[in-house]
Length: 360
Image 1: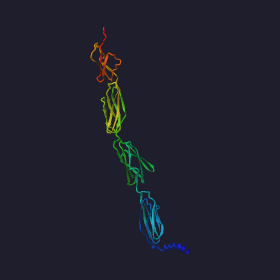
Image 2 (image 1 turned 180 degrees about the vertical axis):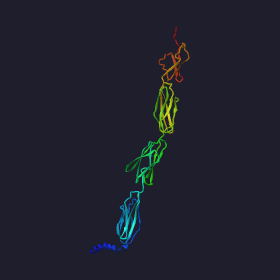
Image 3 (image 1 turned 90 degrees about the horizontal axis):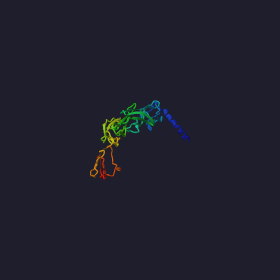
Image 4 (image 1 turned 60 degrees about the vertical axis):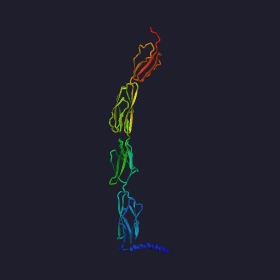
């Protein structure tokens, strides 16, 4: 046990003696690197070799990296580890391997983070009505925005984890879809990324202020207020309605269509549809016109001097009326026979039996 203790004590003393025995002008030092480059994030240490015949130590000019060992005797492998560089700029430090007179300098450079801009979606889609569009942006730099269209404007940034950029999109009153390019660029640098915003076009649309219009029997000039995003034309199959004006489309601004309704000569109410149509859209307005006062005239107003004798002659009455009429013969005397009528021909006919009575 004594021998073991002596060896354990004497070996360190021998090393110290050896180091002390090497004169300063006899120090020999060889290092295989003059520069060490480290990525922004280096999970495993880098290493280099030191060859020496003396006790040396390492001095550093910064604290963002560590060396192991920082002091050793003779040949040794040195490991260098660095904390992550969260800046976009690289950083530089130096380490010195030195003895009494021997000295070796190594430049240590750690690159900065790569510039990054990522979106949660590369294409943002919004409908024709417009509104607020949002995109989640992750970046490690200050950003500058530029937008290549006037119908998209930047509103604000919300911080929820990453930054959410909010944009106001105007209504698209056209039928075609449209695209905007929003460029996110490094405020003091050249890195940038482009976001695409697409907005669909409107569906072909004709909007009417009314679905029905009531017109008096006398008729007259009328109008319908409408808006449309397509060229349109107003037509009516009824000959008693005449369209007098169909202005050009004003992209969903109010238009006015004028039309004329002729006087209604009939007592019955009549209806017709005023049709507004364009490519891809059609709407209708129901025109309801009241009837005029009822009237009916007969010619002759009465039948006189019908012979008493029976005759095959059929007696006629012309009927002039502004309504559809029928004959009610339930109260007619039985000697008036074979009553018939034709509304289309505006006539009524009948036979008269022989009169058996003698008139003095």
